[in-house]
Amino acid sequence: MTLSADIKKLERHFLPKDFVITTWENLEPFFKNLLDRPINSKQDLEQWLKDMSEAEAVISEDACWRQINMTCDTTDKALEESFNYFCMEIQPQLQPYADALNKKLINSPFTAELDQQKFFTYLRSVKKSIDLFREENIPVQAELSVMQQQYGAIAGKMTIEVNGQEYTLQQASKFLESKDRKLREEVYRKIQDRRLQDKDAMNDLYTQLIGKRQQVAKNAGFDNYRDYKFVELGRFDYTKEDCFNFHEAVKLHVLPLIEKIYQKKKEKLGLDSLRPWDTEAEPEGIEPLKPFSGGNELYEKSVACFEKLNPFFADCLKKMKELKHFDLESRKGKAPGGYNCPLAESGAPFIFMNAAGQMSDVTTMVHEGGHAIHSFLSHNLELSSFKEYPMEIAEVASMAMELFSMNHWESFFGNPADLQRAKEHQLERTITIFPWIATIDKFQHWVYENPIHSLEERTNKWMEILQEFSTSAIDFSGLEEYRKIAWQRQLHLFEVPFYYIEYGIAQLGAIGLWMQYQQNPQQALQNYINALSLGGTKTLPELYEAAGLKFDLSPNHIKTLMEFVNGEMEKLN
Image 1 (cartoon, rainbow, N blue to C red):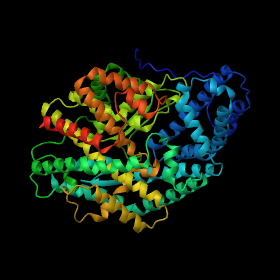
Image 2: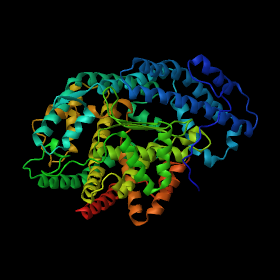
Image 3: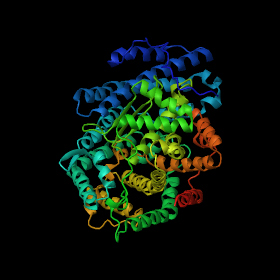
Image 4: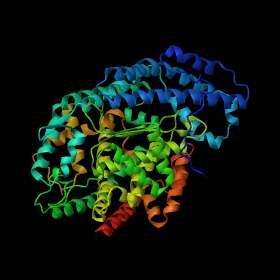
């Protein structure tokens, strides 16, 4: 197929071209139309689905822009109010209609005439939504949508002073790469002390979120929120036991590699004891990697890198730039983190991140770029629901791009020695992320299996799990107070509960694709494009199969992949 990034905004046929969502009153007539409209043939049903899809795309994009605008400036009260208005006044009114429309679809005799293969995952998801829907959950979910955003508001205000200048915590982290060990320790402690100042606010927020989430689960007939969330996330293809197997595999096959990575780091730095502020540092005389300065240069160099990989990938970024769909640099008042936000009607997504000129920003940019390409590749699927792909494949899109793009990082690093260091850094990160994923995931299982717990119990359990997945190669002595709240830096716990193991599952898929790429780059990229173009129209195992991968969380499979990465790392040395 011919790929083009010249993406067109979806044409409206059901809603007026100039229609803008302001209130529920101006939106409701379209939903009444969908609910009351007779469906007397397969053709009627197909038109009805297209109209519903159009309405979903318009609403989804409106909600996304409200969130994008608010995260770009957390200090603007009007932007926050606009987002909250959607969550409290529009979303709750939509939910009963969504449930009624789902039932109308499932109960229509003409649904059986649809292409069952094409519609399988969509109809499965609709049935799941009907099963989960409870009227009494609408106000609770509206409150949750607003409460979850408080995390960004608290974290967005966090700054520290270094050498008389104010920095966000993201910006300050670049000092952890400094060759001055005293400065590294000072900045590390300042960052952690700043987090400690808000630890009670974060704890209180999390406790409230747990309570509300448990209420949602109970209302829907589940014992706990974990079991509810597995169904809501559409985890049809793996279970909590698979997650526990993943945790064990990380201990067995990943921790020994991490031990090796940090022992080597300790020797390289000539230290008796490797402390947490040393892990990003380089030996005396070697400057930290400076891949770019400023958001514009990050964009330009990313385009040059993608161009070498596949010109279509670069065209996607250019189209987003043309539409002003980037906000890349860290600044005070901006929410933390990075994301790619699909825009269902426009098609070209929005990339938000907090770049500070570090190597990790390159990784974030190519990662979010992978997500963006996924949005472009699935935009032409005929229904909005077909584009709702599982997170376990969405993260393969981004993480595989991190690994694919490494071979073309000359655009960031003109010096071969720097390029080699960058690749080494990336491969280390590919491996060192696994224990943190397992830690966060295992912690969430405990939290929601035991929703009624004291702060002390939560802290003790966190420390126990953290210890399970920690390497003895890093010396954390005397840092217990910081360690106790380490989980608070993970926004997923607050904003998107249980969405985290996907990164681990997808990292396995990404490594599998990279193995293919090392043998046959063109075939690997074709497999990648084939899988992403399917959106969410196939099951997770089928999407992996389209990418030439096996959907497998077993310790044996993980062992094979870790041995491959270890071999690639040894080639760099």
